[in-house]
Image (cartoon, rainbow, N blue to C red; front, side):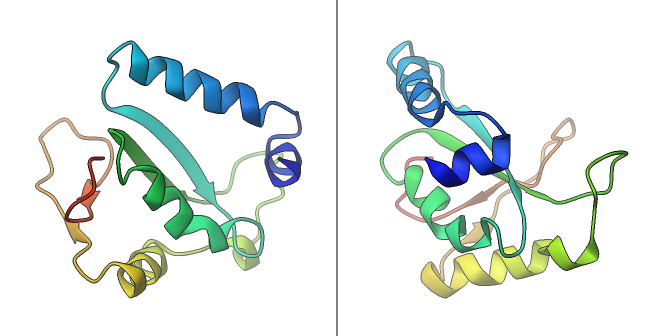
Length: 116
């Protein structure tokens, strides 16, 4: 909860978790979770996020940290896409890319045996 508050600058992790559970209970599927990955901040949680989709139809979307006005962007905080894939594959060697649809805005990947 402390990490969530630090990253989002507001409390509410339990509210977010309950909201995800409620969306799934109402048959919203998949529920999309966006995660901006920051080196030294939350990059150690990549596999934890992947594991959220083991038994639930969650679409976990990892986003490279990008420069925007006011976000104090630094290359030192960047975790490149290829590094994220390699870290996940270290735990899940079968982690692989799925076909990209013509209107997709992200690159879909899956772990064999995971629901999401």
